[in-house]
Image (cartoon, rainbow, N blue to C red; front, top):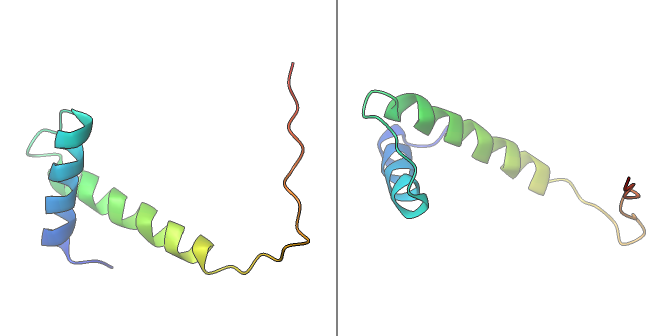
Length: 61
């Protein structure tokens, strides 16, 4: 898992840029969730997808 202090700093910066109110008492939990989300994204990026793979169809109503 990533450095908790760095994740809290990133969370604060992202909240400021996105103008999202994050209460100080929420900061550790929000930072932990961001770290988990980034870890999931890392694992998805590690999957090799060949050029022959096509996108799923899009169905519209």
